[in-house]
Structure formats: structure tokens, C-alpha cells
Figure: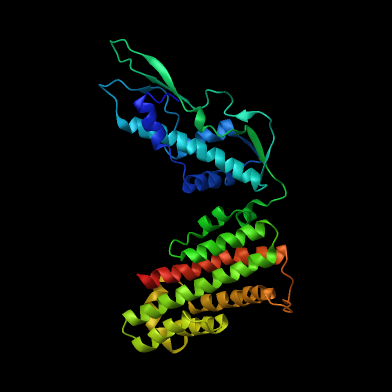
Length: 327
């Protein structure tokens, strides 16, 4: 890299590879309807999809230069690097297998951007910027591992599982526990995975219950009783009893409090009852951490994967209800 070129330095300073971009790249790769993946074919498609096609020759003549060109080149590099990191992460997760010893980019000019000062009717200079210090080499060809079913792969990747859930209103502690849940599952630690899932479920119910109680308070319904309920939900008492109180709050004699909320959210009392049944299974699996406690069914891969796949739908339901209640 030429540190004396201010425009090259501007590009370098704007290169920003975020987790969000890496996740976008993973999602693109996972959705490809093919077993074999040629990086040289798929990377340009991914870049184009996000508005960062090959910038070609950048004209930096003072009369026409626009700083948006710098942003475009920086974006092109950022998304290219993110794609490479996504491929490596998917290889590390055993989802992809390298099928070629040849590395991509194919040569040392992989991250070279051409520029010119030539404009019509005048001479000028042609040269290029080299960004090879940013290159992350990856296999030029990969294929999907046959041992992992495509539809279940999110269970092996915390980023993808959390992204698919889209729980923007969840507490950070719930998100961290979700990440631990998937990391344990990926490493075949099913008991710890279900233990952390138990923490996630507990947090989701409590957060939703507090939002429902606050919704009732905003409607001037039993303010004192609902304030007491919020304190109870935040307290140390048993989780099972808390879930019971939340389901009762949303149903029984409180029906009329939440009739509009049910219409807006589309979430009925029966949905919470169904989630409670799933919660009981998770809770029993979690309790296997206690000495002498034996779950009804062993905490195996099949059990953990079933609970996690059901959890995707159930957690979305709880947090969608919370979202509507908080409005």
C-alpha cells in the first residue's frame, strides 16, 4: 500500500468489515441452490446484490472526482473480505468442504483497483492502488458437507440462529445465552446447550410478562396488582409459577384487557398455552444439571435439535407479543 496517496489512504480508512456483513454473506451462501460453489462465480453476484459491483477504473481527475467513488471502492473491498470470512467460518463449522487447492483471489492483483486521471481531450496518468494487505485467501471451490442438513444448519451457527430469530427487542443477556446455547450444541454438549436454552426461555417469558403487566397498567387496569406482579417476575421465585401467572394474566378474567393486543399481534391464548408445554420440556431438560435428576427422555442430539427448532417459532411469538405490548 502506498501511504503517500491520500485517496488510497481514504479508501483504506473506510474499509469496514462488520459482523452484519459477514452474516449477510453466510445467508447468501446458505441459500445457494447448489452443492458445489465456485467462488469466482458467486462473489461477484453477492457484491452486485448489495450494490458493490467491481468499481472498474476509478477516474480521480480533479474536475470529475467524487468522494462517493471512494465509498464505493471501500464497500467493494469490505464486502469482498466479509464474503471470504464467511466462507472460512462455514468451513470451520464443517458446513463447507474445500474441493480445490487453488486459493482465491487467484493472483496477487486480486485486490488491485485501477485508477486514471485521463479525461477526453487531455492526457493523464494510469495507475492502480494495491490493497493486498487486506486479502483473506480462501479455497477457490467448495462444496456443502453431506453430513449437515441444510434446513438444520442454523443450529450449528450462532450468528445465523440469532439472525433468523430477529429478536431486536430481547435483553442482551438472552442473546448471549442463545449464543452459548448454539455453541454448546455445535460442540455436542447437549446438556449444557439445553441448560442455556432454559435460561433463554426464562428470560423470554419474564420479559414478555413484564411487558404485558405494563400494558395493563397503561390501560389503567389494576395498577397496584400489576406492579406487584412485575416485582414478583423479577424476583427469585420458581420459574414454573411465573409462567403460570403470565399465562393467567393473558387469559382467564383478564381477557378483556388484552383483546385489542390479541387482534393486533395475532397471538391468542392458545399460543401461550402451547409455548408453555414446550417450556415444560425445556425446563425438565435443564433440571438434569441437578444431581440425581433424570429427565424423562435423555438429552440427546435429537431432543436438543427438536427443542431448538421449535424454539425458533416460540421465541419469535413471545417477543412479537412483547413488541406489540410495548407500543
